Amino acid sequence: MSRLIVISNRVSAPRGDSPSGAQGGLSVALAAALRDHRGLWFGWSGEKTDEFTGHIDLQRHDGVTTATIDLEEQDLDEYYNGYANRTLWPLFHYRIDLAEYDRSFAGGYERVNERFADTVAPLIEPDDLVWVHDYHLIPLGQQLRDRGLKNRIGFFLHIPWPPARLMVSLPFHEGLVLSMLAYDVIGFQTEEWLESFRHYVERELGGHGSDDGTIRVGDRSVHAAAYPIGIDFSEFVAAANSPEARAACARLKASADEKRAIIGVDRLDYSKGLEERFFGYRRFLEEHDDCRGQVFLLQIAPPSRGEVDTYEIIRERLDELSGRINGEFAEVDWVPIRYVNQGYPRAELAGFYRACPIALITPLRDGMNLVAKEYVAAQDPEDPGVLILSRFAGAALQLKDALLVNPYSKEEISDAIHNALKMPLEERIRRWRAMYECVKNEDVVAWRKGFVSAMQNCPTRETRAANEA
Ligand code: ADQ
Image (cartoon, protein in one colour):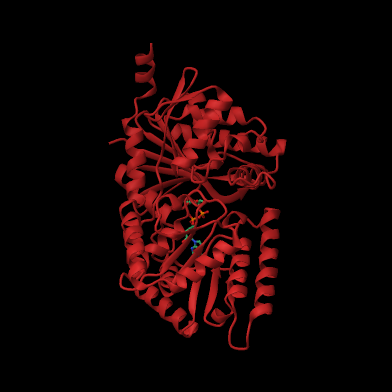
């Protein structure tokens, strides 16, 4: 069997010394794939160095080999905090108002992708499957081809692909997208993002997409399809049944004191629609004064990307808004919003999900949203909670039995909370069962198997060239 080389911005393979379940589902799943296939996981170590040397730190933990490099401060400013998180992230989440276009960011992005290519290329053997992840590394496939790699190379985008009309606001967008045709397989989270990509290629590059998933521009072609990511279902259910989860559930229920908790869990990011969510909840409190004192919103939102200004701004706004809503509605024995800025181990999080009869997950735009799937997986089958989900999350295309809302509409959020509170047990069970089947069957194992087998089944560059000759 071919080896698998996974390349992502950060490497976070499970370590034997980390508390069980403390790592993200994606890292666990990719590590499992690497164990099945042998191979290695390459990326940035998370450390800075004064001068880039290309030194590779090779380590082995729990059957997974990791290969990491350190990056210079300028690399991180221009590539990670710059082009990736100030340019591509907002643009791909439809926020061109927040996207910053700076030549130095684009230069740093190119340079770091070249550095990745220079250091990883010598580690790759002719039969290896190479799987590149996410918006930090879009041009890496082309960089590897430029260094003579003929391997099958796949790319998976974890975030949305923007509509063509927004994509064209990116300077040199054609070059970035053309570089993607160096891959053999490109995966998107949903058909919607795939459709936007195909439309861009047809409109801006004069290419053509066929029904079999082949996208062609001139003599270059790539197989593009949707591979919706899932959670590590068995790991998460085990975490949800652990003593830590039970204790967390009991702790939250005791502190709720018969009030019904509405939970939101998100990285503190403007794409997650937190401000709009708070406004929607506020509208609910205004419209249903009989419910005041009966419910509370538990919003867990650990800060992320603190070095990017827009994240500081959203954090300040949320501090202010939660304080204002609490000041406006609180009673001596009731606070409407519990706003918590910290992360929790997965088992505790699973316990919190189970303790809350409603989840309010309302991103303005989200590639998938795994929190929604985790909430479903953690529920009590006899008395499951209600998921209120943004129709603009990739997950909404699979979890159709959630209460789907427009996250920009305060009224829709307010109505959905009210409907969730009133929903009869029978309906809750019916909706939850359908979502549970989907979360269970379309889990992260199915996702990575689907993607890896698409890579295995695509013809090599040589076969393709011979067929086309
Ligand atoms: P994210 O934007 O980070 O992921 P999401 O898919 O919801 O969003 O995943 C977040 C993960 O972090 C979940 O596993 C969640 O449990 C965990 N998490 C969040 N807050 C936490 C907290 N306070 N404590 C502990 N854990 C917490 C990106 C894309 C998504 C896409 C994923 C995977 O933006 O659209 O679904 O990648 O492809």
